[in-house]
Length: 314
Image (cartoon, rainbow, N blue to C red):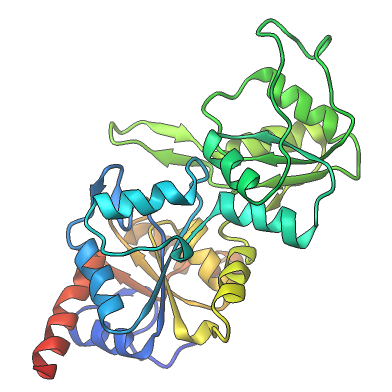
């Protein structure tokens, strides 16, 4: 997205540049994992930044592809980690947006077969979306298990209890061309603190795409639908007013690009400066949509700008 700032274009910004950006933007979208926190530890200064943004009259929302927990759990986590008064309405998760898509966009009439954690099911149930209950015998196989007649959608999210039977049943339901094929997100993997990785929803989605011969509709980042959910709640929201802050080029920066938002990469998560520069220098024009407009080491880099503003107002 073309912008008015001379310092825009995959470079680190500091001090006066950050202040100019903070003064120009009214709406801040933050990813959570790798930006706001690592697991159960808030990133140093993150709570102060979010609290300062709100204190200065800025709108703050959180956009996460993590579908494993309901939004109420996020509210409790924000409070536990020192973020003041984060409300349910500020949290847009891929599970919540999937529920909105099924309820408000396709107006699903029938059951949804869910590959995912309990948090995803809870969001669907709270939206009034009927989920198919798992009642199979532990020894059941695809040869002898029951298949429901009224499944109208298969929704894939992160599932740490994935079984071959779940994949097989989902493949059977997707033989019906009228059965929707949805995925909460397409994140391929997630980093663990031990240096190991956890396969993400994207890897489960890919397996089912191969088995079914179909392509899933992705609800979360980098799809535009998550921003449409935000826009429907915050009337009059203009992309030019927004800054998307994330740690993953292929998810957060592409989401911002797809939605016409300015983007900022923070180096406290998955992607690093070298990754962004590699995409910037790529001969493939499609890779340029993954390049951030701005880069900071951490969102705590916002704090000196706030301190200046507050000193001037005293």
